[in-house]
Length: 217
Image (cartoon, rainbow, N blue to C red; front, side):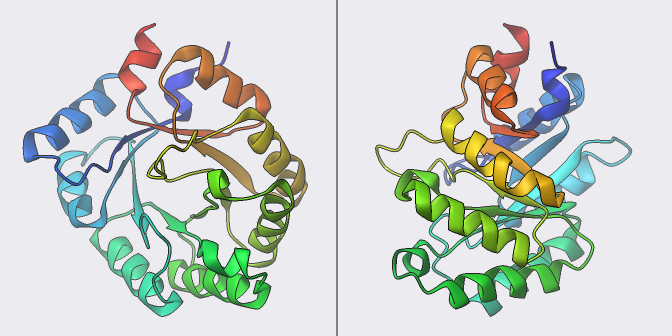
């Protein structure tokens, strides 16, 4: 069985989180040797300070959660987060551009943020709850063209959304892995069974706020 801790990005993106919630997150990440923590950009400096001397990666999100920011704004946000200490960037794609089949705009969005990231790994959140299978496939191909490092399923913020589904993860993995990209499953991963299902479907990373429960099951 895989070492689940080594796949988990322990996540806290709630807008009403307090300082003690973040400290708890960082302590849990150290205790359970999680691969990383994922926090909003405003808390990257705090994470960097608190996790200094550990191997826990600091992951943050840009254009979150709607993805409707201009590419240049996402790029600025990514660059600033990296300056503050982020090790990886998770950007939200502009879903409207996908629905409009404006593929040039989708590609420009990814490329603009990737340029700002330089050598910092970039994950592109597709928001699979809102996409058809064909749209997931096309968006994944554009992630390859845009030189992203990961494709990611979800923000977890779609009202009534399911989040990560094994069939979506498998489709994304089939498309991007031959080109060296990886897959992050996130959204609705709250127990060990679902976590293993995602890994078996092809996920390299798991974004979840239930990391402790998962590894303690």
